[in-house]
Amino acid sequence: MKPAQFDYFRPSSVEETLELLTDYGNEGKILAGGQSFIPILNMRMSEPECLIDINHLQELDYIKQEEGYLKIGALTRQSDLEKSELAANTVPILREASRFIGHSQTRNRGTVGGSLVHADPSAELPLTLLTLGAKVIISSADEEREAALDEFFLTYLTTDMMPDELLTAIHIPIDSIPKGYAFEEFSRRHGDFALVAAASMLDVDENGNVLGGTIAAGGIDAVPLLAEEEDFNVLIGQKLTEQRIKEVVQKMVEKAEPDSDLHASAEYRENLAEVLIKKSLHKAYQRATESGE
Amino acid sequence: MIKKVESKEKMKIQTVINGKSYEKEVEPRKLFSDFLREDVGLTGTHVGCEHGVCGACTVLMDGKAVRSCLMFAVQADGTKIETVEGLVNNKTGRSLKAAFSEHHALQCGFCTPGILMSSVEFLNENPQPEKQEIKEMLSGHLCRCTGYTGIVEAVQQTTDGNSK
Ligand SMILES: Cc1cc2nc3c(=O)[nH]c(=O)nc-3n(C[C@@H](O)[C@H](O)[C@H](O)COP(=O)(O)OP(=O)(O)OC[C@H]3O[C@@H](n4cnc5c(N)ncnc54)[C@H](O)[C@@H]3O)c2cc1C
Ligand code: FES
Ligand code: FES
Image (cartoon, rainbow over all chains, first blue to last red; front, side, top):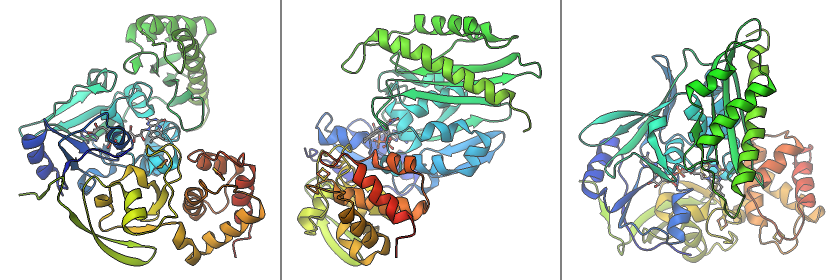
């Protein structure tokens, strides 16, 4: 298994990359960590004319707190996100979720931006960042734009990015981030893509009643699925009950179209979704009600 | 203008492998795993699946364990690489090798070079790991012979103050 021939560019700045994308975006592809893309090239499922290797864009490799956001550069390695104290202190679910992405050896290369653009519906980061209300920053030679993640993922492995665009950063709003959080997934082997994954964020008042939050599930639809606000609202104003959780899950699953494939039947995926959402909600609730900080 | 390397053209790269500097010319599509084996002659790095799943091709790039089959040789330009051949000069590497032998942590040995490289990075970062953490690190490697028990024991022994 060897990739077909391609021309190769190694830009050293975002500006150079955008120039190249203007000229070659249609025939060419960005190469980031390569952990999803190089297997595809090796199997010749894709034969682009040229590759634009962005691994030298150091300006896109950062994690910083600024203006009420945790800002993550698109080229930040997944292992750096996993190990970042700043990320763990401001948005602890990021570390919990990152540990499930592939293996330590693939996280050393794989990037945060690459995971979002690859847009696998059961991937950990798209799902987690969706529950956090994150937005992505996207540049082309002509303009810079922002996209909310719930509009970014279109279907399997497809986002709303144009061929001449580069994803440069992810911004997570952190000023009113819920205190309760949890990420849960099930995969056949440690490090495999999840069959189903779930992430929950919860805020709870001093009486233990739910104030607000979000839930998302991956692996049960063509895109990671965020609970709609009106569905989530079923949980608000009271303690978590099995009855209410079931109600929310049912509403989420109704809107999903899980696939039956080699790995699992649609029915099994729905079942797993219920189990994992419930588990993540309970864990998030427990963390939200823990005393102290 | 940003330089374009044509698909049939060769690009000059410079990399330090196991402490020795190499200057070579390679086509852009050459996988780094093939470069190590064919162009440099270091056949200790094994190639199993060529899509990142088996871990046999794992090497250290600037100290980090990475899949050499999921990188192009041109991307190793300017980096420092360590392969299994370099472990003779590495204290942790030598202790690991001894422990692998002692615990029968290999049979056919196909997976072993990759596992040794991951273990070296892992022990550098976590000198006192839990057994569960060792298993998680090893989840990135497929071994079809040993059943892993010996491998876990060997890595564990290397952490238990035996890495002299
Ligand atoms: C054995 C194995 C197990 C894995 N398990 C998991 C898992 O459990 N969960 C998971 O989520 N992932 C998993 N992955 C995939 C993960 O490792 C990849 O890192 C990730 O999906 C893609 O990120 P990348 O940086 O490697 O991107 P690449 O592979 O380089 O690129 C992926 C796609 O995104 C495009 N792209 C990348 N960056 C940008 C950008 N900044 N702007 C525009 N386009 C861009 C590329 O053109 C390409 O189409 C696994 C991979 C392997 C090999
Ligand atoms: S050959 Fe690289 S991971 Fe299998
Ligand atoms: S020893 Fe044979 S594959 Fe591991």
